[in-house]
Amino acid sequence: MLDHPLFIQGIGFVGTALYFISFQCRDNRNLFRVQFLSYLFYTVHLILLGAVTGGISYMINTVRSFCLGSSWKLAHSKTMCAVICLMQMAALFFTWSGWLSVLPVAANIAATIAGYTHSARKVRLVGMLVNSPLWMVYNILVGSWAGILDEAVSEVSMIVSIIRYGWRNLDAGSHSAREAV
Image (cartoon, rainbow, N blue to C red; front, top):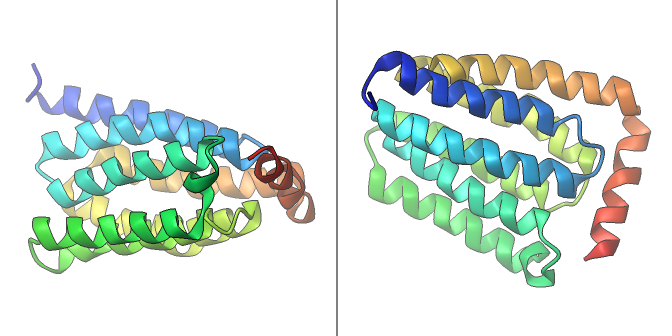
């Protein structure tokens, strides 16, 4: 059952649905909480596909989302941002399988740095221009149907959130999350 291709893709599709929902959260804290759940599903999905670097990178994304969605002050610090980026680099080193391994790690480092700016605008901008395109290529090459759909839907979802809240209003919601820390 666990190795059935449709079951593996189904796990990824649950992650896709959660990731789409995440960009409809106005403030970053809730966005990162929903993404935390999404990343758990994607971790399992990619590891079952044999895409180890991507799976480990998503595990690290789970840590990142937990930190950014928490009220723990250290979790929101530049130090934690650096630690998470170093974890991504370690994942790249230990799971290296050629240039393909660079794609999810580069995408996740960019998304981590954007997340730690605490700017909803920067999170979406980096998501649209760096994170999603790199993950799209990776997902095509490793055969993740859910990942391909996820990146296409994520691009649309980020655009919808910009239209829904307005570009200027996006950071208004993220300030309240930062102040709550």
